[in-house]
Amino acid sequence: MGKGELSAFDLTLPCLAAKLPDGLDHREEALAYAMQFARDVDPQLADKFVGMYVNERTLDYGPEGREAVRRLLDMGYKAGIITREAKVEFVG
Image 1 (tube, rainbow, N blue to C red):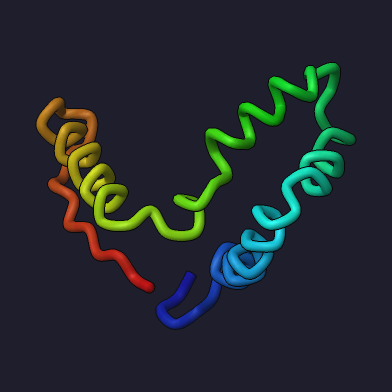
Image 2 (cartoon, one colour):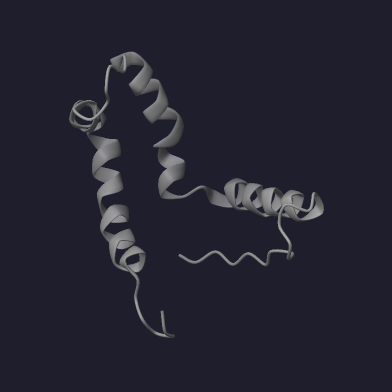
C-alpha cells in the first residue's frame, strides 16, 4: 500500500468500533446471534468466553491496558521474540 492509502482494516475498524457498545448493551441478543456460528458450543461456555474477551475494556482498556501492552512488547523484545524495541503510540 502506498502512503495515504486506506486498507480494508482502516475502513472496517470504525464500523466495528461503532457497533461494540450496542453488543455490550444487548449482550443476550448478540450472544444468541453468535451462537448460530458456534458449532456444538455450550451456551454457558460461549457466554463465559464472550465475557472474557468482549467487555468494557474492549471499548477502552485505559491506562492499565496501555501499560500492559507496553510491558508485553518490552518482554517480547527482551526475550528476543521481537527484533526491534517497540515504540507504542495510542490514538483515540
